Image (cartoon, rainbow, N blue to C red; front, side):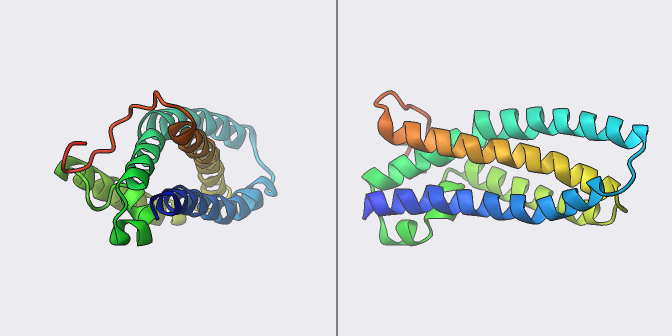
Amino acid sequence: MGTLGAIWGITGVLLLLGSAVYRLSVIAKAALSHELLWQHWAVLLLCVIFMAYAEGYRAFQQRFSPRVAARAKYLRSRPDILHVLLAPIFCMGFFHATRRRKITSISVTAGIIVLIVLVRLLPQPWRGIVDFSVVVGLAWGIASVAFFGYRAFASDDFDYPPDVPDGK
């Protein structure tokens, strides 16, 4: 049951991120079909660089992805029926986590929702430019979740903390 939960947790997170990439790609593609001026291309380049670094590298590769994998590994070794059923949100740290982890997970999610609402107010091609850069960051995130998920189960030296309340 633990292995199934761990696989479901990582797969669920990957599906969530993949769904976002798919939906945002449509909007980003529509922006690129506009006649873009030099300032559009400049902002696109800056946004892509920023989101690759801030979202892809800093947020996903250095923080989120190792923690998702560590929590999946924890779930594998300590399965609980509720944790297995809700494995994707367990792996994202929404429950059975330290107080700090829960607050951080909920705060980041709320901030993302606010940003989504604000970006939807932008006209094209600006909305598509932002969405294109988010797709770059999310694609990096998908790759890093898959990488750390694999590494958590294929390597003995995976020592990222799962941020669970019992401190194990």
